[in-house]
Image 1 (cartoon, helix red, strand yellow):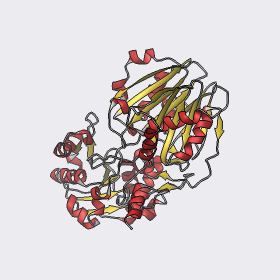
Image 2 (cartoon, one colour):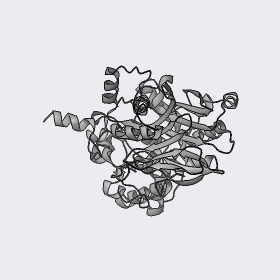
Image 3 (cartoon, helix red, strand yellow):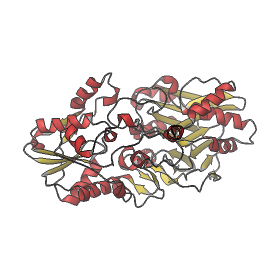
Image 4 (spheres, rainbow, N blue to C red):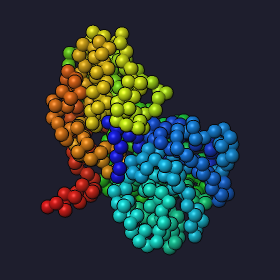
Length: 472
């Protein structure tokens, strides 16, 4: 896995699929749904539509609004469709790596979109290349497509080929797979990445990484895809499922609730908004402070800041404003430019913070450079004291499942104590929520969580374990 040099976390990828039995304009519905999922990936996006076994796919680098024009959408017709928004934690940000991925093989066409990261992708790729496979891109989706296509040569159906492929995949994956007549949704046996099912009238079924995607097109939420479940939409009034790989220990990424998902989404029974407010309550209990104002770093710190204000009784307000028309900081060409761009992306509300002791809530500290700049910005605006509160524990371990948390050498909490980090970012006080408190924030969740980036307790073998074993 490659890592960029941002001091903030990156979003996941987002998936959306439609099997239409009503005559909807699938391409335009997909456009609105991907807009709702844009927060999960802003590097590239794509839509693939099946029109009587003819696949039309349009994808490119950029945001949904930039890649799809009214003219392009008007040319895309069909009754089965899938879409993808991408952030690259593996591979590079090139058009070749944009998804969905359309492949032709002996059984016809196979279209796939993937959210997550396989820890054994390199191993699988090397094995396939030694057997003659030629790869056009550098992403996990192409590896998965090859494996499914190989299994399909002997399997009686595409869904059974998918079922036979799952044991070969180690890591996090939510998938959409489109054959000439079927749309299949798959979630890895740990349920590490979210995926849910919705329905429109006349048994038109939709699949989405988050429930906010369903709401964007007026679809009714039915349920979440179970960890390990394969769900098949094939034009009949009801969905079919394969649950051969269900029943294991679940491990949904806890950062879906802390940072990645939209606050209006509900994931596996848990409201994201409620979970973030609960983190804020926990922070206020564990790290109280005498202050005049509480606010969050837009956008991921806002809900936790509301919870902190509710629990502490300190007024909630706006200490920082976000410029929503600037590119994200990590796409800048150099570290110095990234640091300068923070001042363009965020601005202190001088009249709100001047002369006050403020509590600023954010979701995480990775390297500390961005946080240091924000603290300085607030003090330059006249803040008397700046107390930083973080709605996640310190990062001590890398993530191998699709969240861009870098190796330990690049994590500030692996090098310094919390007091040293406080001094580095020049905050008056600094508090992280504890791992114990984090376990209490999602009481309605049907799944357990992966918190390996804080604890080092991975739900499966990962590269760092192999390295440690090799060094014994």
